[in-house]
Length: 246
Image (cartoon, rainbow, N blue to C red; front, side, top):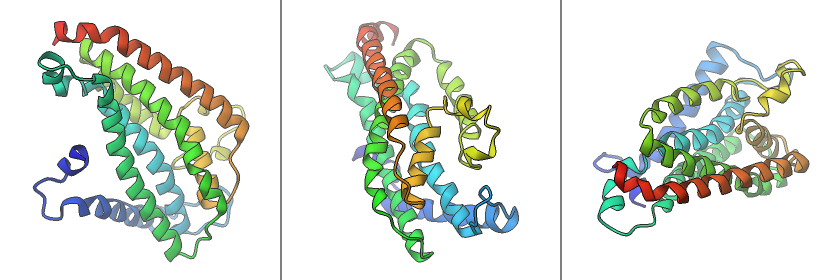
C-alpha cells in the first residue's frame, strides 16, 4: 500500500493517475501507430484501434517485467536501515515491488478491457487462463529480482547495465511486431527472451480466444521455478554480507 500510494502522494489527482496514465498512453499508441504510421499487425485484418490493443497488451506484460527487474538492483540500497538497525526479512522487498507493479498492471488490464468493450471486441472464455499464464512469469521475475537485489549491493553498476538490457529486450520482444513476421530460423532465438512467450500467450487468450500452448508453458514453468529457486538461494547465501558492504 505504501508503494502504490507513495508514488502519487502530493499530486492533485492522487491514485487517479494510475487510471489516467494508461488511458493517455493507449490514446497515444492509437494515434501514433494507427493514424500516423498506419501500422498493421502481420497479414491479419486488424484496424488501427485493434492494433493499439495488440500493442498495449504486449506493453502491459513487458512493463510488469521491466519495472520489477529495473528496481531490483536498488532495493537493498534504498532500505539500508532495514539491513543495519532492525531484524527484517529482506527477502520480502522484491515481493513488495512486484506487488506494486502488479497493481498497476491490473489497472492497465482494466483499461484494456474497457477499450475492448467500447470497440466491440468479443470477450472469450480463454481469458480465464490469464492467472495460469502469469504465475510462472511472476516466479521468473522474483528469481531475477532476488538475484539482482543481492548483486546490486556488491556491484553498483548493475543498475545501469539492467537499464540497457531492458531497452534491448523490449525491441527483441514481439511487442511492436508479431513473432510470425520474423524468419522461421530466427523465431526460436527470440523465444529465449523471457517475455516473448508470455506476451504471445496473453494476446492469444485475451484478444483472439486461442487456448494457451500448454507444452510451451510447462517448459517455461520448469525454467521459471529453477530461476526462482536459484535467485532465492543466492540471496539467502549472500545476505549475511550486506551489512558489511553497506
